Length: 271
Ligand code: CAA
Image 1 (cartoon, rainbow, N blue to C red):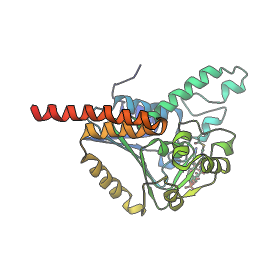
Image 2 (cartoon, rainbow, N blue to C red):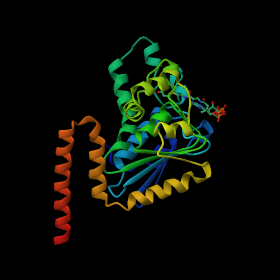
Image 3 (cartoon, helix red, strand yellow):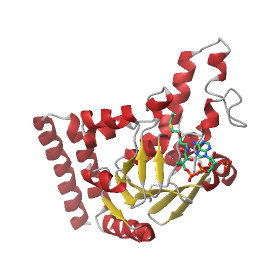
Image 4 (cartoon, rainbow, N blue to C red):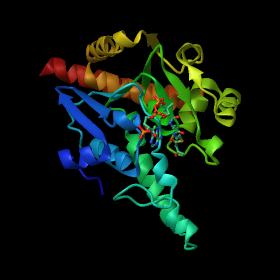
């Protein structure tokens, strides 16, 4: 069941997240700069809660990180037997010989919910990335519809180097953007991608000086808000489904969406 109640300040603070809503724009900030915005399970379940409870009036979601890094990825304490205070250790149960694989997969599904909502049609999500976006941080940026990078940004899919796989919904957008071969090279070497290379690989819509990051994102937000909300949502839905559709399926989807748009415009003219 979706929890549509507004997250409390306490929940967000414990998760290292801040939420600011100003009219149609929500800004979600990762707010543990002293740990380079390392994220825990609680960060991701709080992000899921933010997504579920966002007012319908919100059309744009900006995801950013406080301090020098967008995010250093998962809090590495999550992998220690001690875990993170107040949270379930990913390793303890497995190590103690009672591996409930299904329960662990459910836990990960709850984490993934924190990333999935950023693609939904009613909003456009933008990641504003400075400094490092590593592992889960890179996947969070990939979950957004667009990425604006500061020129010091460094992207890295670190998971395979730690003996793991990227599991926070980042593999699909990565392959869609850079292709399977390049995605393999990036993931299986876990090397850092500079902002300049990210632009060349189309992982960034723009690369700007760090001091211009906020202003560039604001300009993009203003441009996006100029387009009528319903048309934007219907167009985003079409674009998102295009890679998985045949040409005929996509043409049909375009027709159906357009008929709805025309009917809505005619209705507006009548009223
Ligand atoms: N988890 C916990 N603490 C972290 C952290 C992380 N991922 N990243 C940084 N920190 C802490 C550091 O331990 C340090 O703490 P102290 O001040 O107590 O020493 C503090 O944050 C500042 O870090 P640095 O001094 O290292 O800062 P920097 O600016 O020099 O470097 C960095 C930044 C390149 C991000 C570096 O901190 C780093 O490499 N961090 C680890 C990155 C990592 O391996 N993340 C995991 C990726 S895998 C994943 O995310 C997904 C998954 O599911 C497996």
